[in-house]
Image 1 (tube, rainbow, N blue to C red):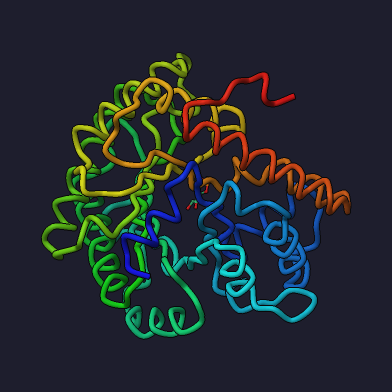
Image 2: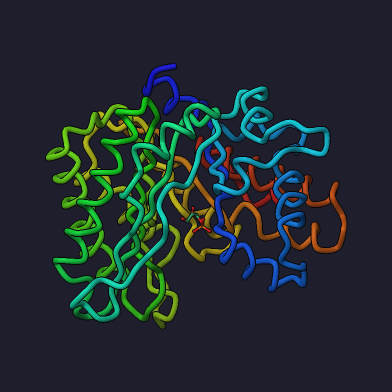
Length: 333
Ligand code: 13P
């Protein structure tokens, strides 16, 4: 399978991506919130529940896994990447090693994990990975993000993306602009333009083939503490406007992160963008973590495996409809 074919399966045909790549630390926080003990076996059981959901392949074209999960197996001994491949779902792997403080820039981060990445990628590819993910995270205040934080994050993303393509897999390029803060949607728009412009400049410098990447951006949205929350229509209009301005048409797919939006909010915003714009050059879809898993995790915590799978399948279906601009709140019932 070439890069373009992989990207098309991940983001085309009304499908999106399940981000199930929480690091053990982040997964631990999610487990704490619902009272699940943070053990390796509980993480395996939870991911097994998600990945064995009957019919998941109808709405999901790719699943992002964390290193531990990537090498775990189902109860009957099947490695998770193999299980996904049998369903026609692309297995992906988070390869960044997390955020680190950016020297000389208090309150800003950059992403670690480039050292040894070429060798790690080769091992994941050998074990079935078809794509990878690398997340940068930028904080908005009146002064931040700094030019240097944007540049450093973009440069690291581009270096990672080039290494993935060398290894024959699709890089998900994720420059997350965090929702935390009291900034307005206009400030989010301004930062997003700056970030995406820099990311595409660096991708070009690294000679990355844009037809073989998937962009995973935040939506242009009000800060979570902003007193005047922008409407669904404003989020959709501003997000599509910024993407048209900054993302070249050769990029096959744009798959949003949910970044703290509620399950329904993330679906509504995605639907509005697709309902209002029929001729976009890229597939506009989802790569949600919390917005696909929140309800499923609660059911799992109550030992309701079937309920957890039903909840995940429902959100996947709602977001698949949203990719096609066909979602209505009546579908939630
Ligand atoms: P959320 O959708 O929960 O933001 O997670 C997506 C993700 O993969 C963040 O890196």
